[in-house]
Figure 1 (cartoon, helix red, strand yellow):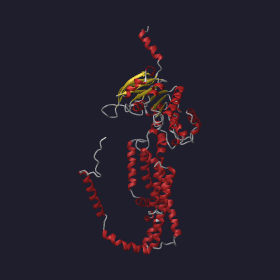
Figure 2 (figure 1 turned 90 degrees about the vertical axis):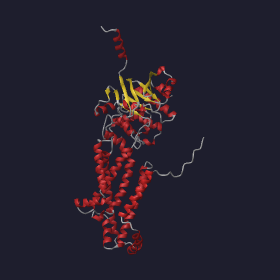
Figure 3 (figure 1 turned 60 degrees about the vertical axis):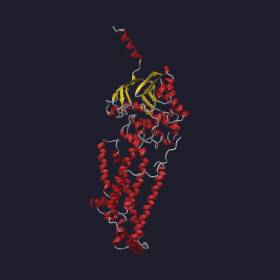
Figure 4 (figure 1 turned 45 degrees about the vertical axis):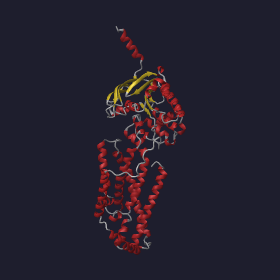
Length: 266
Length: 263
């Protein structure tokens, strides 16, 4: 057996790769410039942040009960919107899955609509629904529903496209209809992905629902806005800490459920 | 008055059972210049058991998929149970497929469902809709048929176990039960024991061929095990370089004859 030459640790990039790196660097500088990057402002922000924290500390505890109920409403918005969004995502995902139920053009149109739904930010959906159904948590729930639909339907469809085709083929060979194949072979095989995506959808919904109040769509966000508007920083800090605790708790719960329900499948 | 040649021909025709599968001039290429196979022609008589052998990449699985209408082909004609598979409407194709079954190398069970639901899905060609999606909603006669099929493969006690909790041999037995539950007339088995250890493979082959012979099902199966081909097949089709190199009754063949296909 002959020993070959030990390869170099790093390969010299090709001219094209070098141009790609250079272009990436130029785009980053351009973006930072457009975003108003200022080292000087960062340097000056320390004392200001310290001033804010000194005025906000200790967090206000006198309105904990009211803020607690607002947080409960926030969770209700998130859970209702995410649950309805996940349920609606299943039939929409069936339309968005290539080669499963519907002709290719229907799949393309469905994917374009889902792309549009995802492209509109949750705060923009909340503003639209505040106009449509009025101020309050219902508008927030509808915004979360749309946000979840755009996210989950797309990933459900991707999960269904990625399943092993063997069981589907075995059922096709027995004369099963497409809808039966989807229900009996494709959806069960994609279920670990569905559960995982749904839990991410719920986590995303809880994060989003905490700020929908900024535009009058219910939840604890309005308390944050009022706290800053009235320079009531202790209350604002309490709201920020409550949001952090709830979001982290929901993420931990999501991770636990994912591992308990779907194990190592995904 | 009929002449002698014609009389002989008519007598021969009367003695030959009608073909369940007729393949004429079949060509499949996957869009490449060189076809996987070209101009294949053969018949499989009703109730026959035919082994399809050949080295890897000779197109055995593709040929089986073409026979079931699961894969399109560029040239030729496939007549399955008296129907030209290329000209059938979607509904007619489903009706035809409700009389066929497929047992694959990877078993192809749905892992997260129970064994009973998996077997029940073999009846989807006969009954469609949510009542056939899970054993919990299934009509009593469908549940009974699925349990009877499980009984035949010796696994009724595992009916409520999840399919991903089965051993390889058990999993393939369930796949066989699913293929047999609709009482098919034509069955395709694509390397049914390739993923099993030799002992489990022998056991599954014995059981599979006992069942299909008892029920008079027409079978075409592939195997890399030359002994299996000679022992379980009544006839052997040997694929090499895209053509049928062997089409002969197993009675006149030895393993040495088939070894050339893998050379």
